[in-house]
Length: 134
Length: 110
Image: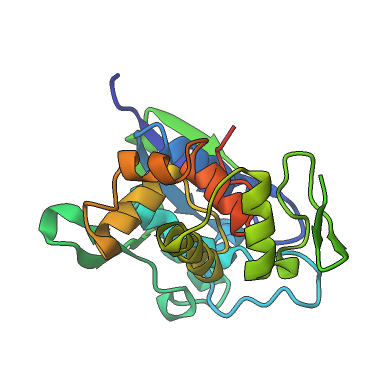
């Protein structure tokens, strides 16, 4: 089976709609097929990765810890658009620390989040075989 | 398919996964295991406890492949392999062990 490059694009806030959770589930399911999977976060989608989420008052599950499991599923490239962060008054420090263990490098822990600017994000998208938008 | 523990009824779905994760106790785990025709021992509890810890940390029941990879890392290759897992849980480690651990059905598990 040839490997294709899949990019899942997240543009919506984590709660209020089901898009973010559904996207994450699709990523986890898709990871089982051993494709080259990346995930992109732009617009309000960058809020999905913020740390310290607390959904106690809105009665839904806080699924943000699941992003930290993506490395176990060999999903190790999480592209975050710098402009989207800046427009929302966020910096990299507002995001969860998400790492993966590099099996080819003695299980060294490496960061999964890659901050890119808008032009670089366009290149990331252009480089894919399949782009799925949520 | 509900379970009975000490005269209390614990709600579960038609496949036997409990509805409220907070209902779980080791005792209930034992009752679910009986329904699954699994005889629990230290090795099986080790896997069940591992799954519960994983869920606590990541809010997700891991896929079999991920479970085995993680077990291999923490417990060594003699336990972190398919054969060992299917010996412990013949109808699928993630499926049966997650059910006994009181977790939802693993994502992507059909």
